Image (cartoon, rainbow, N blue to C red; front, side, top):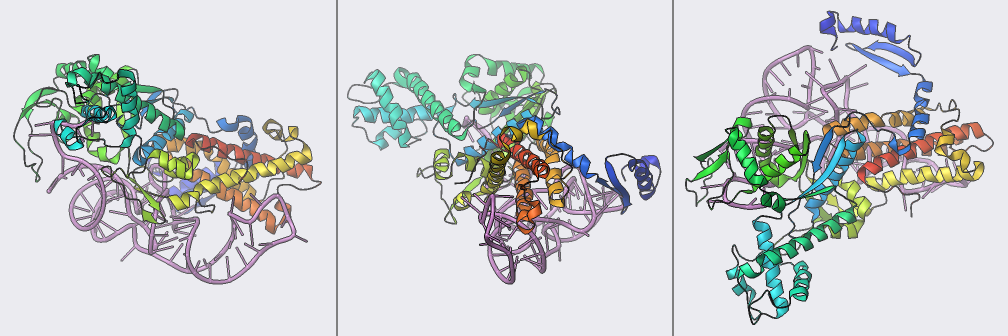
Length: 545
RNA sequence: GCGCCCUUAGCUCAGUCGGAUAGAGCAACAGCCUUCUAAGCUGUGGGUCGGUGGUUCGAGUCCACCAGGGCGCGCCA
């Protein structure tokens, strides 16, 4: 139908002509025109069976693609401020980013996994003040929290108890040297840099521990502070200035909802509107220091300079308003040579006993990544986080996550793999492990595989490489989870067919040829499940317990 | 007020490049265990794809407007 216009022929006529040609191909069993110009093709079963040896020889590498042609891609994810443990929102970004990176790598891109540490800004300063408060407490200060809070610029934040060990370590190393006599607060010039460094180091270590629990390992941890110290921010602003994209100006207040303390103010602005953003964006605060955006431009400039034509950032939905300005900045600073894509992850609501778990940072009642892993396990967390499109909100039902039923996709897929392994173990007892090695099964004659449910399963297996490429191009790792679920359903169906019809069971006593062909199919199914779970960072299980 | 995301079966969600009669699970109903794990499988019923227009041979998919939900909106990160 697409070709009809350039060919100047009616779609149905063109379809008939195509059919006449296609029917000649040896792989094609039937071809017929259909509907308004479709062509229905039916491949010979032999053409389908022929995919199995390739799967068995490729192993977990089945589905690897040359699509990316080795092009460099930088995937930045998590990038939580180093101010405390990771919570469930970070968790989704971590899993989505990690799976996306694995997916792109499988699709043939040269992927760098990166974490941007915001270790320079006001949040980290607030963290230092919070740690210092705990330090004074360790020393036995007479100050009340209220008194101390009055001394802190912007007030005391980060009251969580997780800072106490950091303060204790400081006290262990420095004694009372960072405090005034009597465990009172000393001049910040005396302690601030030391405390901030210790706090950031401790929080970074904690975050990396959390990520390790989740099985996330990134290649690069980029430091905002290092960029600032090396002058990267000034260079980036100078670069934009040379391109005529920086000016001093006054922004209009947001339409309809003017902040109460709004007053017109001249600022250093980036001409983001020249690259599709709604308004130009400030790079300097009124006190002359750089905005977060300015630092972020320098960071993205750094990534571009490191040779990445494609940058992918995985962000929380609360940063949605930030996307267009960052895309504008990347377009500006690279002269259009590099592109930024942003994958936004919407909020995750946790359900326990069917009720939403209330989260309040102030009350310290938010669900941490560690909590979640303690409750349901790493593999379940990773799989469930990939059972929704990232730009749709998600409910994480703790009860469903540990349920041993078809409702739980993790269980369902794992169960299929365990069943595969169970059959192969039984087969190995009958025929010996050597005969059931994947390389050996790849040599088996397969012509006995002819049942519709068997061919349906093979068709699914054959679709894996395309599914990988499509998911990689769409930047949608959740598709892998759905593919595996469908694959598991095909397998469970075939398994149960053997109950109704004993000739369809995988293991046929005294019929080695049929059995080996079926074991090749089972082994190939297990391979594809493992290949998919590997992308998701989920461990396949050998048996259910 | 403005911008971005979402809206598909009673519920939770898929839906590939715009392609034929829109698919799963749960819930409801009816079945399947002398058998490689019944933790599973089979079948039935269930739809104005939020609404209205438009583009197209063809729209859940693209465009415009509207409604509802979420997120954000100068010197936080």
